View 1 (cartoon, rainbow, N blue to C red):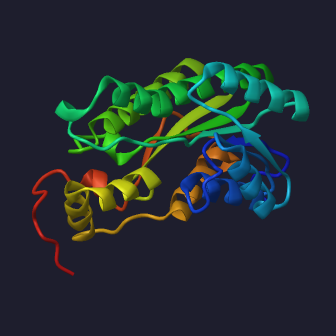
View 2: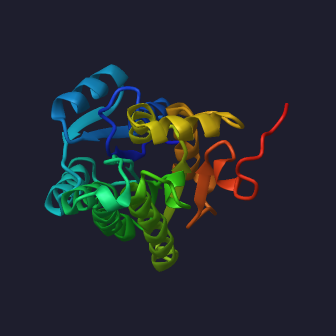
View 3: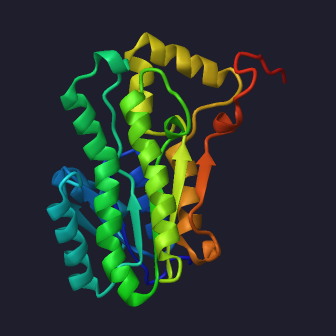
Length: 258
């Protein structure tokens, strides 16, 4: 098993059927002790019980730095170390930039970007001290280029990419690796947006004209690779797991046969 005796925190993993839950499930199957973190403690407990094995539920609002610090400190106090952190929390308020409020901006930025910063900063303390660790941040294909209707979400996820790269460069001599995954339509926020707006429905139709929406399990497989020793020489990588979405720049309206 690739994660045997490893201690992992997966944020946003209390949502059944989401990317976080899929990652937590994959990690448990590979031998890790997993802290199922969610803002809703009841949901975290439900997923932890369903996964069985060596799991612990932890209620945490990752948009608060003190809560993230307390969680990481508590996990290290209980288990003696922290080997893996997956910053998975993500959500959006869809809408055109000109129509969004200050509250929309700060809520999405805090929930996606600030939460990732708090997690990286907190995890670096024990990981640098033990001279090992893997941090996996979940960004989005929306963070790579313009995504109409997802301006705030895309800006936050672009920030996650930059934060990942800088953290990797700053810590490469410490034994801590920091990498990032950019899924496409495998995330709950995007799937919800697809169904809630005409722009979302059209975007989904354009994606499915040449590719398909991803699944949480496909993202979990990439997270497992980056978290494990199989990726010991992989650092600062932004890994698209998007069916080729991020490669489609020229002739975006061209139809693909076959």
